[in-house]
Length: 411
Ligand SMILES: Cc1ncc(COP(=O)(O)O)c(C=O)c1O
Image (cartoon, rainbow, N blue to C red; front, side, top):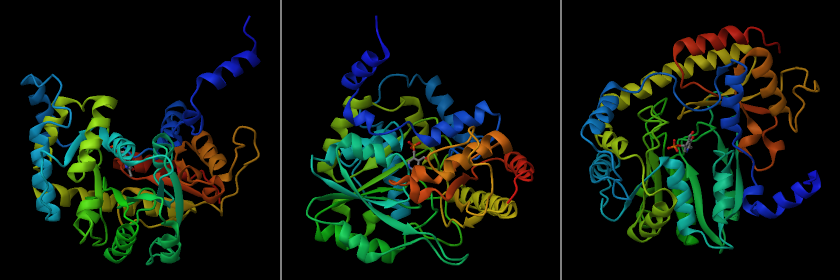
């Protein structure tokens, strides 16, 4: 007969030490809780409005044209060509579609493949905190030791999230293999400036490190903020791995098409890892991607304008509800501070390891709104205990429903 203790013994032996080191994604869990409690979901960053008709039509056409079998493992030629053309048009950088691009199942897989391709035991990576939660498990799975560098919240409306240059310099050393950058940034909305990027560039060159830069929000910018890719800085083309994808720019997070742009040597390694992880992303959707990436500039301008309005709307809603808000300059999230709220945090239904998690549970169950607890963006959960994140990639009706429900929340 199997006892509970022998079950525990078996599971300890049968589960890898790596898999035991991280939990399920808190962000994805919040979406499940939103569904369970019929809450307005302002947690996970997926649009609840339709994708562009032309992009959907391209996917339908690709299936009608019988593009149904495996694409070349490193990506359909048509999509690689479109990426080359777009990167050249938007960043002025000409890459080689045959040797410098790997199409993956979303930028999530592109990041994982890139890390598995470059990390050796003992290698360190530098990661800004707060960070997109996937980078934690990415580090564990690839065997990298992260060195975290804190970003500090803006002091007022007109200032930005900042980091201490000396602290960043101290995080680099002889074991640094890469810095993981994300600009525009999730969850803070920070858009790294050229000056900041140049400082990071100098450290990468000094310590012979890669910059792996997640640029998935490159077209979602506000207040005249400019997206600068690290790959374009002098001396960085040969040591930058750009991670990007269709999810956010074309509102198709469920299509799972992303890519890594890297110099030929790391690309060879990324392609091998990718091939044995997933073989390839969905072939007809890659074909549709080839067409989506040829969208006119007006499409990208329209995307940013639409999100700018949604940002204003949610900033107003959250401010009226009593949150301290940190205005984002890019991406589609608002980080907030919840220190002012009094709520029954010791109620057993909400009691949690930190205040932000208790608040998120209270909000989803009692107020009917899902957010992401701030602790999921920090290595030490206490660092995010006073923060929660909301997304505004939602239709007006969704934001209006949230506004109505927030009326029940008391400061
Ligand atoms: C910074 C960042 N990178 C990557 C992803 C995931 O992108 P994909 O859908 O291409 O895997 C997200 C999704 O929220 C994100 O915020």
